[in-house]
Amino acid sequence: MKKVLFVCLGNICRSPAAEGVFRDMVRQAGLEGKIKVDSAGTGGWHEGDSPDGRMIQHARQRGYDLSDLEARQIRAPEDLSEYDYILTMDSSNLRNVLALDVKKEHHHKVKPLVSFCRIHSVQEVPDPYYREADGFEHVLDLIEDACRELLQHVKKELSA
Image (cartoon, rainbow, N blue to C red; front, side):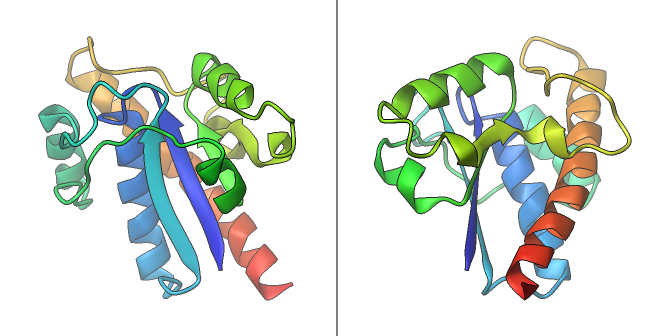
Protein backbone atom coordinates (compact mmCIF):
# COMPACT_ATOMS: atom_id res chain seq x y z
CA MET A 1 0.00 0.00 0.00
CA LYS A 2 1.25 3.46 -0.97
CA LYS A 3 -0.21 6.53 0.68
CA VAL A 4 -0.43 9.96 -0.96
CA LEU A 5 -1.30 13.21 0.83
CA PHE A 6 -1.95 16.44 -1.09
CA VAL A 7 -1.47 19.67 0.89
CA CYS A 8 -2.51 23.28 0.27
CA LEU A 9 -3.33 26.20 2.54
CA GLY A 10 -6.96 25.69 3.62
CA ASN A 11 -7.79 22.31 2.04
CA ILE A 12 -10.80 23.71 0.15
CA CYS A 13 -9.51 24.29 -3.41
CA ARG A 14 -6.26 22.82 -4.66
CA SER A 15 -5.57 19.84 -2.41
CA PRO A 16 -9.13 18.45 -2.46
CA ALA A 17 -9.10 18.85 -6.25
CA ALA A 18 -5.84 16.88 -6.39
CA GLU A 19 -7.32 14.25 -4.06
CA GLY A 20 -10.40 13.90 -6.26
CA VAL A 21 -8.46 13.78 -9.53
CA PHE A 22 -5.90 11.30 -8.25
CA ARG A 23 -8.55 9.17 -6.52
CA ASP A 24 -10.39 8.90 -9.86
CA MET A 25 -7.19 7.97 -11.71
CA VAL A 26 -6.39 5.33 -9.06
CA ARG A 27 -9.92 3.91 -9.40
CA GLN A 28 -9.71 3.80 -13.19
CA ALA A 29 -6.36 1.99 -12.91
CA GLY A 30 -7.95 -0.60 -10.59
CA LEU A 31 -5.58 0.27 -7.74
CA GLU A 32 -8.05 1.38 -5.05
CA GLY A 33 -6.84 -1.22 -2.58
CA LYS A 34 -3.20 -0.40 -3.21
CA ILE A 35 -3.09 3.41 -3.11
CA LYS A 36 -4.61 5.54 -0.33
CA VAL A 37 -5.35 9.16 -1.24
CA ASP A 38 -6.07 12.06 1.13
CA SER A 39 -5.64 15.82 1.41
CA ALA A 40 -5.06 18.38 4.14
CA GLY A 41 -4.37 22.06 4.69
CA THR A 42 -1.55 23.73 6.56
CA GLY A 43 -4.19 25.94 8.21
CA GLY A 44 -7.16 24.65 10.12
CA TRP A 45 -9.72 27.42 9.75
CA HIS A 46 -11.81 25.45 7.18
CA GLU A 47 -11.71 22.17 9.13
CA GLY A 48 -14.91 20.22 8.49
CA ASP A 49 -15.94 22.34 5.49
CA SER A 50 -16.67 21.01 2.02
CA PRO A 51 -14.41 22.09 -0.83
CA ASP A 52 -15.07 25.51 -2.38
CA GLY A 53 -18.25 25.32 -4.48
CA ARG A 54 -16.47 26.71 -7.53
CA MET A 55 -13.86 23.94 -7.37
CA ILE A 56 -16.58 21.32 -6.92
CA GLN A 57 -18.33 22.68 -10.03
CA HIS A 58 -15.22 22.86 -12.23
CA ALA A 59 -14.10 19.41 -11.13
CA ARG A 60 -17.57 17.98 -11.79
CA GLN A 61 -17.46 19.37 -15.34
CA ARG A 62 -14.38 17.19 -15.87
CA GLY A 63 -15.97 14.13 -14.28
CA TYR A 64 -14.46 14.36 -10.77
CA ASP A 65 -16.65 14.17 -7.68
CA LEU A 66 -15.39 16.17 -4.70
CA SER A 67 -18.73 16.29 -2.86
CA ASP A 68 -17.75 13.77 -0.16
CA LEU A 69 -14.52 15.54 0.82
CA GLU A 70 -14.10 17.48 4.04
CA ALA A 71 -11.29 19.89 4.93
CA ARG A 72 -8.83 19.00 7.65
CA GLN A 73 -5.54 20.32 8.90
CA ILE A 74 -2.35 18.33 8.46
CA ARG A 75 -1.38 16.46 11.61
CA ALA A 76 2.24 16.24 12.64
CA PRO A 77 3.90 13.91 13.30
CA GLU A 78 1.12 11.43 12.35
CA ASP A 79 0.65 12.43 8.70
CA LEU A 80 4.36 12.86 8.16
CA SER A 81 5.09 9.30 9.22
CA GLU A 82 1.98 7.68 7.67
CA TYR A 83 2.22 8.98 4.10
CA ASP A 84 4.74 7.93 1.48
CA TYR A 85 4.19 11.07 -0.62
CA ILE A 86 3.33 14.48 0.80
CA LEU A 87 2.76 16.75 -2.17
CA THR A 88 2.42 20.50 -1.72
CA MET A 89 0.77 23.03 -3.98
CA ASP A 90 3.10 26.00 -3.53
CA SER A 91 6.35 27.11 -1.92
CA SER A 92 4.61 28.40 1.20
CA ASN A 93 2.91 25.03 1.76
CA LEU A 94 6.23 23.29 1.15
CA ARG A 95 8.02 25.43 3.78
CA ASN A 96 5.19 24.97 6.28
CA VAL A 97 5.11 21.19 5.92
CA LEU A 98 8.89 20.89 6.11
CA ALA A 99 8.81 23.01 9.28
CA LEU A 100 6.48 20.44 10.88
CA ASP A 101 9.17 17.80 10.37
CA VAL A 102 11.34 19.09 13.20
CA LYS A 103 13.69 16.08 13.19
CA LYS A 104 13.90 16.12 9.37
CA GLU A 105 12.99 12.42 9.25
CA HIS A 106 10.41 12.82 6.47
CA HIS A 107 11.81 15.61 4.29
CA HIS A 108 12.42 13.10 1.47
CA LYS A 109 8.65 12.51 1.18
CA VAL A 110 7.72 16.18 0.85
CA LYS A 111 7.86 17.75 -2.60
CA PRO A 112 5.92 20.08 -4.87
CA LEU A 113 3.14 18.36 -6.80
CA VAL A 114 4.26 20.19 -9.94
CA SER A 115 7.56 18.30 -9.82
CA PHE A 116 5.55 15.52 -11.50
CA CYS A 117 4.22 17.75 -14.32
CA ARG A 118 5.29 16.74 -17.81
CA ILE A 119 3.22 19.13 -19.97
CA HIS A 120 3.34 22.31 -17.89
CA SER A 121 6.53 23.96 -16.72
CA VAL A 122 5.54 25.86 -13.57
CA GLN A 123 6.88 26.36 -10.07
CA GLU A 124 3.59 25.89 -8.21
CA VAL A 125 -0.15 25.34 -8.40
CA PRO A 126 -1.53 28.86 -7.87
CA ASP A 127 -4.34 29.43 -5.39
CA PRO A 128 -7.52 30.06 -7.44
CA TYR A 129 -9.58 31.31 -4.49
CA TYR A 130 -9.57 34.99 -5.51
CA ARG A 131 -9.57 34.32 -9.24
CA GLU A 132 -12.15 33.88 -11.95
CA ALA A 133 -13.23 30.58 -13.52
CA ASP A 134 -10.09 30.33 -15.66
CA GLY A 135 -8.02 30.14 -12.46
CA PHE A 136 -9.85 26.99 -11.37
CA GLU A 137 -9.50 25.48 -14.85
CA HIS A 138 -5.75 26.21 -14.88
CA VAL A 139 -5.38 24.54 -11.47
CA LEU A 140 -7.19 21.44 -12.75
CA ASP A 141 -4.97 21.37 -15.86
CA LEU A 142 -1.84 21.38 -13.67
CA ILE A 143 -3.23 18.79 -11.27
CA GLU A 144 -4.25 16.41 -14.06
CA ASP A 145 -0.80 16.72 -15.66
CA ALA A 146 1.03 16.03 -12.37
CA CYS A 147 -1.31 13.26 -11.23
CA ARG A 148 -0.92 11.29 -14.47
CA GLU A 149 2.85 11.14 -13.98
CA LEU A 150 2.51 10.57 -10.22
CA LEU A 151 0.31 7.55 -10.88
CA GLN A 152 2.91 6.08 -13.24
CA HIS A 153 5.59 6.66 -10.61
CA VAL A 154 3.56 4.99 -7.83
CA LYS A 155 2.62 2.07 -10.09
CA LYS A 156 6.31 1.39 -10.73
CA GLU A 157 6.99 1.39 -7.00
CA LEU A 158 4.11 -0.99 -6.36
CA SER A 159 5.38 -3.45 -8.96
CA ALA A 160 9.01 -3.29 -7.78
